[in-house]
Amino acid sequence: MKYFISIDMEGIWGTSYFYEPGERVSKLMTEELAHTVEVLMDIDPRAKVRVCDSHALGTNILPEALRVNVELVRGFPRMFYMMEGLDESFDAVLFVGYHAPIGHPKGAMNHTYSSASFFEIRINGAPLGESEINAIFASMFNVPVIFISGDSALFEFSSGYFPETEFLITKDSIGHNAVLLYERDRIYGERVKAIEKAVKKLKEGRFKTFIENNPQFAPPYNLEIVLKDTLRADLVSIIPGSKRKDGRIVEYFSADFRDIYRFIVASSILAWQASQIK
Image 1 (cartoon, rainbow, N blue to C red):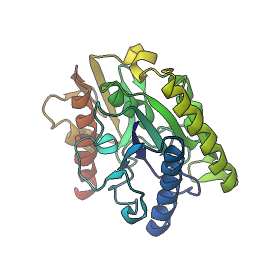
Image 2 (image 1 turned 90 degrees about the vertical axis):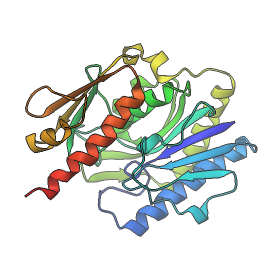
Image 3 (image 1 turned 60 degrees about the horizontal axis):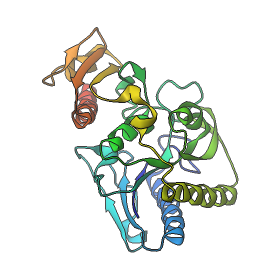
Protein backbone atom coordinates (compact mmCIF):
# COMPACT_ATOMS: atom_id res chain seq x y z
CA MET A 1 0.00 0.00 0.00
CA LYS A 2 1.04 3.58 -0.60
CA TYR A 3 0.21 6.19 2.04
CA PHE A 4 0.27 9.99 1.98
CA ILE A 5 0.67 11.78 5.32
CA SER A 6 0.00 15.50 5.70
CA ILE A 7 1.31 16.62 9.09
CA ASP A 8 0.55 19.90 10.88
CA MET A 9 1.63 21.25 14.27
CA GLU A 10 -1.40 22.56 16.13
CA GLY A 11 -3.05 19.19 16.71
CA ILE A 12 -0.03 17.15 17.72
CA TRP A 13 0.46 16.05 21.30
CA GLY A 14 2.32 18.55 23.50
CA THR A 15 1.53 21.90 21.85
CA SER A 16 -0.85 24.65 22.93
CA TYR A 17 0.52 27.89 21.45
CA PHE A 18 1.38 29.14 17.95
CA TYR A 19 4.79 30.39 19.06
CA GLU A 20 6.21 27.28 20.66
CA PRO A 21 10.02 27.19 20.32
CA GLY A 22 10.93 25.95 16.85
CA GLU A 23 13.28 23.20 18.02
CA ARG A 24 10.60 21.82 20.32
CA VAL A 25 8.00 21.86 17.52
CA SER A 26 10.38 19.99 15.21
CA LYS A 27 11.07 17.41 17.88
CA LEU A 28 7.40 16.80 18.71
CA MET A 29 6.25 16.71 15.09
CA THR A 30 9.06 14.37 14.07
CA GLU A 31 8.39 12.04 16.99
CA GLU A 32 4.67 11.87 16.23
CA LEU A 33 5.33 11.30 12.54
CA ALA A 34 7.93 8.62 13.28
CA HIS A 35 5.47 6.73 15.44
CA THR A 36 2.73 7.00 12.79
CA VAL A 37 5.09 5.62 10.14
CA GLU A 38 6.29 2.87 12.50
CA VAL A 39 2.73 1.74 13.09
CA LEU A 40 1.95 1.72 9.36
CA MET A 41 5.04 -0.34 8.58
CA ASP A 42 4.40 -2.79 11.39
CA ILE A 43 0.97 -3.43 9.89
CA ASP A 44 2.11 -3.27 6.27
CA PRO A 45 5.88 -4.03 6.02
CA ARG A 46 5.92 -3.19 2.30
CA ALA A 47 4.22 0.16 2.82
CA LYS A 48 5.54 3.19 0.98
CA VAL A 49 5.00 6.55 2.63
CA ARG A 50 5.22 10.12 1.38
CA VAL A 51 5.04 12.87 3.99
CA CYS A 52 4.08 16.49 3.40
CA ASP A 53 5.42 18.84 6.10
CA SER A 54 2.40 21.12 6.27
CA HIS A 55 3.08 23.59 9.07
CA ALA A 56 4.24 27.14 8.34
CA LEU A 57 7.13 27.03 5.85
CA GLY A 58 7.27 23.24 5.87
CA THR A 59 10.69 22.93 7.49
CA ASN A 60 9.72 21.26 10.75
CA ILE A 61 10.28 17.54 10.21
CA LEU A 62 13.86 16.36 10.74
CA PRO A 63 14.60 14.31 7.58
CA GLU A 64 17.50 12.46 9.16
CA ALA A 65 15.09 10.90 11.68
CA LEU A 66 12.88 9.26 9.05
CA ARG A 67 12.95 5.56 8.15
CA VAL A 68 13.64 4.04 4.78
CA ASN A 69 10.74 3.96 2.31
CA VAL A 70 9.68 7.43 3.49
CA GLU A 71 9.72 10.43 1.17
CA LEU A 72 9.40 13.99 2.48
CA VAL A 73 7.95 17.09 0.82
CA ARG A 74 9.70 19.99 2.54
CA GLY A 75 9.91 23.77 2.14
CA PHE A 76 7.81 26.61 0.74
CA PRO A 77 6.31 28.01 -1.47
CA ARG A 78 4.61 25.15 -3.26
CA MET A 79 1.54 25.03 -5.43
CA PHE A 80 -0.61 22.65 -3.36
CA TYR A 81 0.85 23.42 0.08
CA MET A 82 -0.52 20.83 2.57
CA MET A 83 -1.26 18.29 -0.16
CA GLU A 84 1.81 18.73 -2.37
CA GLY A 85 2.95 15.40 -3.78
CA LEU A 86 -0.40 13.58 -3.72
CA ASP A 87 -1.52 11.81 -6.88
CA GLU A 88 -3.67 8.88 -8.00
CA SER A 89 -0.96 6.33 -7.17
CA PHE A 90 -1.76 6.53 -3.45
CA ASP A 91 -4.15 4.22 -1.63
CA ALA A 92 -4.88 6.36 1.43
CA VAL A 93 -4.32 9.71 3.12
CA LEU A 94 -3.64 10.34 6.81
CA PHE A 95 -3.92 13.77 8.46
CA VAL A 96 -1.69 14.07 11.52
CA GLY A 97 -1.74 16.98 13.98
CA TYR A 98 -4.74 18.76 12.46
CA HIS A 99 -6.92 21.37 14.18
CA ALA A 100 -10.34 23.04 14.14
CA PRO A 101 -11.17 25.78 11.61
CA ILE A 102 -11.01 29.44 12.46
CA GLY A 103 -13.83 30.65 14.68
CA HIS A 104 -14.38 27.45 16.64
CA PRO A 105 -15.23 28.61 20.19
CA LYS A 106 -12.80 26.20 21.87
CA GLY A 107 -10.43 25.24 19.08
CA ALA A 108 -6.82 25.39 20.19
CA MET A 109 -4.89 27.62 17.77
CA ASN A 110 -7.90 27.50 15.47
CA HIS A 111 -7.33 28.88 11.98
CA THR A 112 -7.81 27.96 8.35
CA TYR A 113 -4.54 28.11 6.38
CA SER A 114 -3.73 31.71 7.37
CA SER A 115 -4.22 32.87 10.95
CA ALA A 116 -3.04 36.33 9.89
CA SER A 117 -5.41 36.92 6.98
CA PHE A 118 -8.40 34.56 6.72
CA PHE A 119 -11.54 34.93 8.79
CA GLU A 120 -13.43 32.09 7.08
CA ILE A 121 -13.29 29.88 3.99
CA ARG A 122 -16.50 28.60 2.42
CA ILE A 123 -16.85 25.97 -0.28
CA ASN A 124 -20.24 25.80 -1.99
CA GLY A 125 -21.67 27.87 0.84
CA ALA A 126 -20.34 25.82 3.77
CA PRO A 127 -17.61 27.02 6.16
CA LEU A 128 -14.88 24.38 6.12
CA GLY A 129 -11.54 23.70 7.78
CA GLU A 130 -8.27 22.38 6.45
CA SER A 131 -9.32 18.75 6.96
CA GLU A 132 -12.35 19.09 4.72
CA ILE A 133 -10.68 21.23 2.04
CA ASN A 134 -7.66 18.93 1.86
CA ALA A 135 -9.98 15.91 1.70
CA ILE A 136 -11.82 17.42 -1.28
CA PHE A 137 -8.42 17.74 -2.93
CA ALA A 138 -7.70 14.06 -2.22
CA SER A 139 -11.05 13.11 -3.75
CA MET A 140 -9.83 14.37 -7.13
CA PHE A 141 -7.42 11.43 -7.12
CA ASN A 142 -9.99 9.00 -5.70
CA VAL A 143 -8.00 8.68 -2.45
CA PRO A 144 -9.85 8.37 0.89
CA VAL A 145 -8.80 9.89 4.22
CA ILE A 146 -8.52 6.93 6.61
CA PHE A 147 -7.06 8.53 9.76
CA ILE A 148 -7.11 11.98 11.37
CA SER A 149 -5.44 13.04 14.60
CA GLY A 150 -5.91 16.34 16.37
CA ASP A 151 -7.63 18.12 19.24
CA SER A 152 -11.15 17.58 20.53
CA ALA A 153 -12.49 20.66 18.71
CA LEU A 154 -11.32 19.22 15.40
CA PHE A 155 -13.20 16.01 16.15
CA GLU A 156 -16.30 17.99 17.11
CA PHE A 157 -16.27 19.94 13.85
CA SER A 158 -15.04 17.35 11.37
CA SER A 159 -16.19 13.90 12.45
CA GLY A 160 -19.58 14.20 10.76
CA TYR A 161 -17.90 14.74 7.41
CA PHE A 162 -15.76 11.58 7.77
CA PRO A 163 -18.09 8.70 8.73
CA GLU A 164 -15.56 5.86 8.34
CA THR A 165 -12.35 7.72 9.17
CA GLU A 166 -10.58 6.75 12.39
CA PHE A 167 -10.02 9.78 14.64
CA LEU A 168 -7.43 10.11 17.38
CA ILE A 169 -8.04 12.93 19.87
CA THR A 170 -4.61 14.04 21.08
CA LYS A 171 -5.76 16.67 23.59
CA ASP A 172 -8.86 18.40 24.94
CA SER A 173 -9.24 21.96 23.66
CA ILE A 174 -10.02 24.48 26.38
CA GLY A 175 -9.49 27.71 24.44
CA HIS A 176 -7.35 29.36 21.81
CA ASN A 177 -4.09 28.91 23.73
CA ALA A 178 -5.12 26.32 26.30
CA VAL A 179 -5.44 22.53 26.21
CA LEU A 180 -5.64 19.55 28.50
CA LEU A 181 -2.86 17.18 27.45
CA TYR A 182 -3.65 13.51 27.90
CA GLU A 183 -0.92 11.13 29.03
CA ARG A 184 1.49 10.66 26.15
CA ASP A 185 1.76 6.88 26.40
CA ARG A 186 -2.03 6.65 26.28
CA ILE A 187 -2.12 8.68 23.04
CA TYR A 188 0.60 6.56 21.47
CA GLY A 189 -1.27 3.39 22.39
CA GLU A 190 -4.52 4.72 20.97
CA ARG A 191 -2.73 5.70 17.76
CA VAL A 192 -1.70 2.08 17.21
CA LYS A 193 -5.28 0.87 17.60
CA ALA A 194 -6.76 3.62 15.39
CA ILE A 195 -4.33 3.09 12.52
CA GLU A 196 -4.74 -0.68 12.72
CA LYS A 197 -8.52 -0.25 12.39
CA ALA A 198 -8.09 2.22 9.54
CA VAL A 199 -5.80 -0.03 7.50
CA LYS A 200 -8.04 -3.03 8.10
CA LYS A 201 -11.06 -1.10 6.81
CA LEU A 202 -9.03 0.13 3.84
CA LYS A 203 -8.11 -3.43 2.86
CA GLU A 204 -11.77 -4.41 3.21
CA GLY A 205 -12.76 -1.64 0.81
CA ARG A 206 -14.93 0.18 3.33
CA PHE A 207 -13.75 3.73 2.61
CA LYS A 208 -15.32 6.21 0.23
CA THR A 209 -13.79 9.48 -0.87
CA PHE A 210 -14.80 12.69 0.88
CA ILE A 211 -16.97 13.79 -2.04
CA GLU A 212 -18.72 10.41 -2.19
CA ASN A 213 -19.63 10.88 1.47
CA ASN A 214 -20.44 14.57 1.00
CA PRO A 215 -21.83 15.08 -2.53
CA GLN A 216 -22.58 18.75 -1.81
CA PHE A 217 -18.89 19.34 -2.45
CA ALA A 218 -18.86 17.87 -5.95
CA PRO A 219 -17.90 20.31 -8.72
CA PRO A 220 -18.44 23.03 -9.77
CA TYR A 221 -17.01 25.02 -6.90
CA ASN A 222 -17.87 28.38 -5.41
CA LEU A 223 -15.05 29.51 -3.12
CA GLU A 224 -15.61 32.40 -0.74
CA ILE A 225 -12.72 33.73 1.33
CA VAL A 226 -13.66 36.10 4.13
CA LEU A 227 -10.60 38.25 4.78
CA LYS A 228 -9.79 39.86 8.11
CA ASP A 229 -9.93 43.40 6.70
CA THR A 230 -10.57 45.32 3.51
CA LEU A 231 -6.86 45.83 2.78
CA ARG A 232 -6.38 42.07 2.51
CA ALA A 233 -9.48 41.84 0.34
CA ASP A 234 -8.02 44.59 -1.89
CA LEU A 235 -4.89 42.49 -2.34
CA VAL A 236 -6.65 39.16 -2.98
CA SER A 237 -9.07 40.71 -5.47
CA ILE A 238 -6.08 41.53 -7.69
CA ILE A 239 -5.88 37.82 -8.64
CA PRO A 240 -7.35 37.26 -12.14
CA GLY A 241 -10.74 35.54 -12.02
CA SER A 242 -11.57 36.74 -8.52
CA LYS A 243 -14.78 38.58 -7.75
CA ARG A 244 -15.19 41.05 -4.91
CA LYS A 245 -18.46 40.20 -3.14
CA ASP A 246 -18.31 42.90 -0.45
CA GLY A 247 -15.77 44.68 1.72
CA ARG A 248 -14.06 41.55 3.06
CA ILE A 249 -15.30 38.67 0.87
CA VAL A 250 -13.62 37.60 -2.35
CA GLU A 251 -15.17 34.86 -4.52
CA TYR A 252 -13.68 32.50 -7.04
CA PHE A 253 -15.39 29.91 -9.25
CA SER A 254 -13.99 26.81 -10.95
CA ALA A 255 -14.99 23.27 -11.88
CA ASP A 256 -11.42 22.11 -11.12
CA PHE A 257 -10.60 21.94 -7.43
CA ARG A 258 -6.90 22.30 -8.20
CA ASP A 259 -7.69 25.86 -9.29
CA ILE A 260 -9.61 26.41 -6.04
CA TYR A 261 -6.70 25.13 -3.96
CA ARG A 262 -4.16 27.24 -5.81
CA PHE A 263 -6.37 30.29 -5.30
CA ILE A 264 -6.42 29.66 -1.53
CA VAL A 265 -2.62 29.33 -1.44
CA ALA A 266 -2.09 32.41 -3.62
CA SER A 267 -4.55 34.41 -1.52
CA SER A 268 -2.77 33.55 1.71
CA ILE A 269 0.59 34.65 0.29
CA LEU A 270 -0.77 37.82 -1.28
CA ALA A 271 -2.83 38.82 1.77
CA TRP A 272 0.23 38.40 3.97
CA GLN A 273 1.68 41.43 2.17
CA ALA A 274 -0.79 43.59 4.08
CA SER A 275 1.68 43.46 6.96
CA GLN A 276 4.26 45.13 4.70
CA ILE A 277 2.01 48.03 3.71
CA LYS A 278 2.19 51.02 6.02
